[in-house]
Image (tube, rainbow, N blue to C red; front, side, top):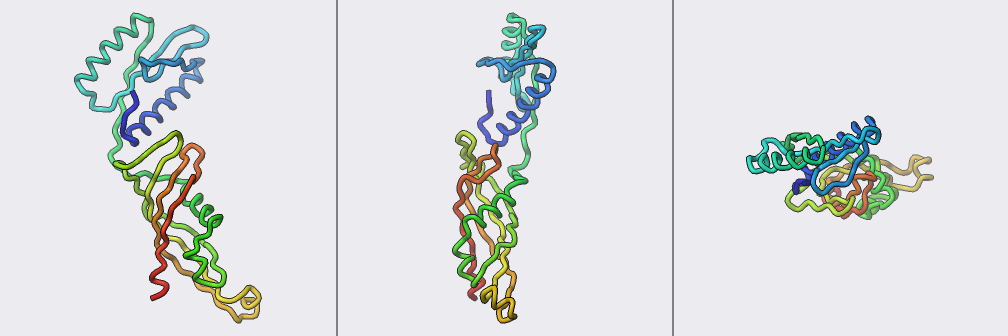
Amino acid sequence: MKPSSFLNEAVYNAKINELRTKYESLNYQVSKSELYDLLLINVKSGKKIAFELKFFPVKEEDLEGIYELKDAAEAEGIDLKLVTLVKPRSKKIEISWLSEKLFTYFIEHFPDELDQLSTHTHLEGVTLEKIDFDIESFEQLDNNSSAQITGEVEVSLQYGSDSDMDKDFGSQVSDSFPFSAQLVLDLQKKSIVSCEYNIDTSDFFE
């Protein structure tokens, strides 16, 4: 049975995928099962292996259920294996591809808060200072997940047209501003589905 916590579910799914990949390379195929977490059948020999995944420490009532499940598996000629998982200790989640995707998103949906700061505002980079998932309000529908993030956006502010710059009549400075955003992410496709953000440029006008 899948765990209810998102982080635990991520660990659970990773182990299922790891087992599936390993045994598929050994001529096993996944078979649908409502009884076992994972049921595999060898396409050549017909041997059946089932896996039951539990987080450590395993509760006493869960052990009783495992013993009953093992007896049922043996009656069907299935080799049942117990796999114990370790619960994540930290609620911090790092998404390696998010900075690049957010940079691209801001370029394609250029923030008005930045555009109004100069004649030409160029985005130089997006630095994520913190990526926090509020586990209590985390929602996952199909492949989409919601996350609250904070960070800093770096920009180049150009005053004057490009021709003014060529004639040394204009000027260009760099600055950075903090932002926060509520994202909807497709973790499988590594993409941003939607982004509601707030960029604080108040220091610029002081």
